[in-house]
Length: 192
Image (cartoon, rainbow, N blue to C red; front, top):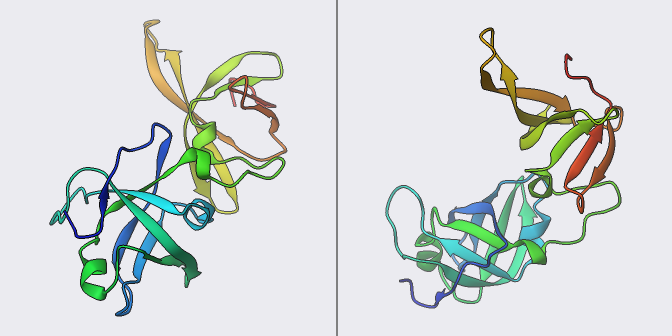
């Protein structure tokens, strides 16, 4: 274990939001690769939970908590410093660590804005109530986001096979998102 890191339990609502890329400067700052183009969760949370890198050298094991002093945007990435990381050597020892933040510490989304993580698993139905599938992931496709839906489709022998459907997540096609009902209603047909 690295000096200064504190063993912790990963919160039940923890979301992986990025990873530590490398040290940044000589005073304990480190560079973070966020998994979101808008890494507000990294900026708003003062406690990050770290898990060791999946590949390469592991300088610690288990879940560790990191008390963040400051995190800020820097040239398309995030740089941060923490109470337990005082110099470049300590920052380098964090290289590759996976960063998790409790979902409950995310800032509130604005009206008609959603965190992708909240859309995963929602059922998608069209205006007629026909089930189109369940959101498995979201993709950035140029200026818009696209929902990837999983559903089953009968093959030539009538056997159900897994299939995917893509629907742009834009107001022209999305009528309603109901997080409490875990449903998205769209203007889309089964044969599009």
